[in-house]
Amino acid sequence: MSTGALSQIRVSRALGIALLAIASAAVVTTSAWAQKSIAVGGYLTVFGNPDQTPPLWTLVGDGFSVLGSGGDIGNPGGGGCRPCVAGSRIRMSGIFTGVTLGSGLAVVNGALIRPVFFAGQLNFHAKAAVMPDFDGNSWRNVTVPFNLGTDSILQGYADSLRTQLLFTIRPLIGTGTATLHLSQFVSSSGPLYEFVSVTYSFGPGVNLLEKSGFEEYTSPVLGVPGWVSDPIRQTPAFSDTNQPYSGANNGACFTSDLLDCGVYQEVTAPSTGTYTLTFYATSDRDGGFVGANVNDATVVYSSVEVRGFRNYGAPYTMTFQATAGDTIRVWMYSPPIPGYVVIDDVSLIGPQ
Ligand SMILES: [Ca+2]
Image (cartoon, rainbow, N blue to C red):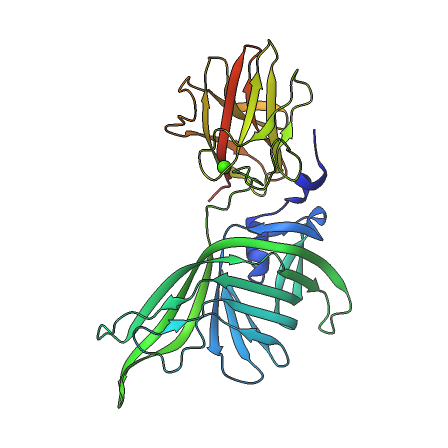
């Protein structure tokens, strides 16, 4: 089993809530400290006056609220529209950086700690939004996708002076939608929008796999973080440029002899629940399979239909259960028969 870089994908909905100031029953294990973590649930709403110096904001999440103020750098997405009229482009990226991001509570190794004082840097990246036409209502929402930058980091301290470090989460990543809430009113110069708040909702749909479309490899290379040629097979798998489903690359097994072949990728289940696995795959002979193991036991698989060269057709989608901390191995197998099995755009989506 290959651990290493793949084992660094640890966390969870728990950290989704941790980020948002950690209420509810969020459990963060010691092994998550200083690990790459993925927020897959929860939300963060930012109210406040983005123009105030120093900035003052309120972060409100699932069942908790925290205050951040004074000396920290912070700017919610959607805060910089002046004058904010229909057709204006508005920056939707947000950033919160500092040593006093607020305080809340956390469950650390099973023990409730209250308060935890947060510090760090949260970078919400989103494309600019265009203000819609005035519709006569008193409020308006504008929603765009966001991703949390890989330079995002969250630290928790036991004391307000931030001397007793409890944990470091780095990088903290996630995707979702940013919804900008605006008030609309008619001024003497015409209709205007005004910032009220922005909500970052961490969504489903984070692909837990690395290099899922093989685009980051230079053929024929594979390797972690990402895909591994299964060493117990008779001929190696490789990254390939002959049969991409999308982009320029795909993953492949090929033999002109009687050699089997396999490729896999392992991740640590970030939370407990139902996972959805999707492969695009095709082959020129029977005997190929795609599937998943949990802790070395096969839990789901599908035979790859003989659809022929680059004729991927409908994806193979499977669901299975896993528990937080389980090792999930996503794999493709090619039989010891002359021919190929190719795959591309593989996704593993965690519990909603
Ligand atoms: Ca590809």
